[in-house]
Length: 171
Image 1 (tube, one colour):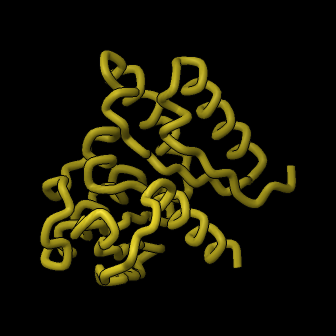
Image 2 (image 1 turned 60 degrees about the vertical axis):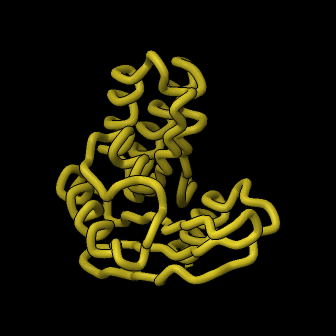
Image 3 (image 1 turned 180 degrees about the horizontal axis):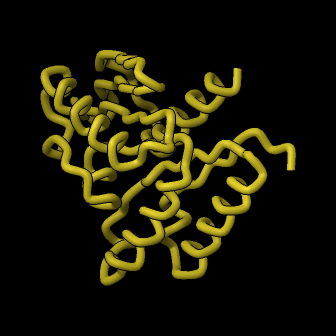
């Protein structure tokens, strides 16, 4: 009660059958109390191996009650079966329209969510990446074209994006 937003990660949801069920129960409890539900799909092949149907069912149900859905092109395709651009992060600036088309398909499949976001990442070298993002909030597109950033440690970049996104939504 009183929690404004709960954020769920597909990494935790896919760790084991119990953690998947736990994330779903958290989402259901949050929905019951009017808490905003944020779900970052975070697909990882090693977690999904031999569990595709089980995890697709759980992720689809969580996505169906979420208010905010976050994922890259691979996440939406492999977790939810939504067609998207070729995975791999090459020539991202030229693919922005295809990312928008993918997000539009996600919105159609999950109409109860109000915010959809994806990062745009392309590795130039170990310490240099192109980073940008696309967000659909209601009917408003927000696009940050990929730009070069210096990378000190790539672990947690997506989590940092989601943290900033949620902060902005709450403010």
